[in-house]
Amino acid sequence: MRMLHIGLRVTDLERSLAFYTALGYTKLGSVPETGFGSLTMLKLPDDPFVSLELVHDPERPVENISAVNHLVVQVDDLDATIADLAAKGVAAEPPADPGPGIRTSWLTDPDGYRIELVQWPSGHPAGMTEADFG
Image (tube, rainbow, N blue to C red; front, side, top):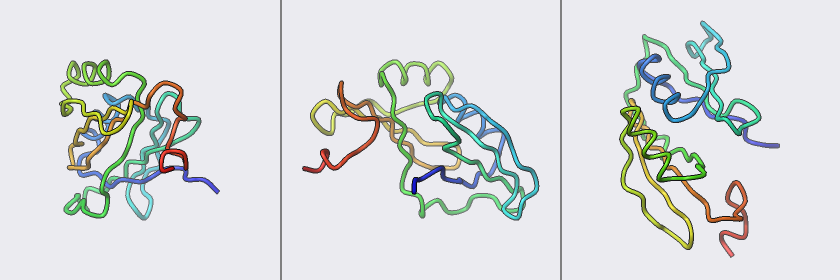
């Protein structure tokens, strides 16, 4: 088994799509008129498949985001990513160093979902492993 993607309900599809493409996501396709609303499938450049689905139904705007604490996106160069986002009009918080060699920054999408950008130290696997807790 493996986690494939998460679906986030969004209030304004075009605004959210602009935000997530500025962050680096690419639209792969969409599925109109499902029981949830329209579905827009996104992936990051190094992802082999869809990792984020934007769910939009104009009759059901986002009113509560408390069930989702945050999303995490790995970046190769946090400073360059923050500068690139700023050039696209997306503000990120100043970087922090929460652990040895780990750098993070936070930003918020148009509906209020929090996104953590993470730059792992050189040689770290692409995600968290048991070694991160040992």
